[in-house]
Length: 308
Image 1 (cartoon, rainbow, N blue to C red):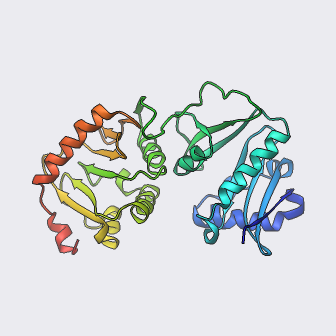
Image 2 (image 1 turned 90 degrees about the vertical axis):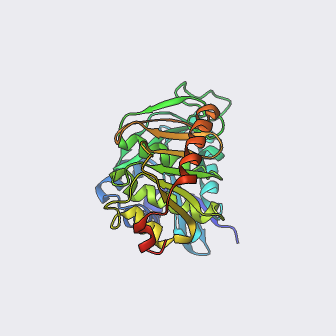
């Protein structure tokens, strides 16, 4: 049965809305309560609240300036289309209220979802409650989007080559590209001890990817195997050993990800990188490098000891 969605205000449904946001943002994502609760914004916002029978299961809010946010759907009702219903519904309200655009700060892992709903993306990553975000925009009422918004980071389309100047930017880029659900993924990690590869959000995104997309084992190439037995990445490989084909080659000197058919992220050091969502020429060069190394690589001894 489709969810029932009502338009409401915080003062009318505070208990239901706060329970959903508490579960999704504070309990699941670990966001601090002082970062989540926004009394002034909540008091001013128009809310959509979704029910399954009598149970509140999702919400989203629209602020007076045309920004929406706090989109939250309980885990039991995800992948049902409810998130899209809520966003489309809040877009209709924004249009009714006369806003030329619908704006938001989106977690990078959700950018692919918003792109499918017609949103344009800004290119610069920023930190909100410790999580990488991008600004997003959907034109309304035949208006044009501000110039900073485009199809940035859209796999297979945007050919810009971006400089990523920090591990935070690299994480945001990878979350953005993985969140689009690419059919193909290959990973080369020169330094498996780099904290970036043990980032919980990145490993969660990788886990979601292999559950949804990979019937064949995902190839991962490591530059060495020393001292990695207790690392979070290896624990993931242990839990889902049939989903990965992990090999080691001492000739791997830099890390890179091949994403989809033309997207890549290539590190020049542990702290900076370059990336493109659509660069067939460089993608093919990295692809050849990966295949040459992977073909002559060995199964890591520590992986064999773990039964991988």
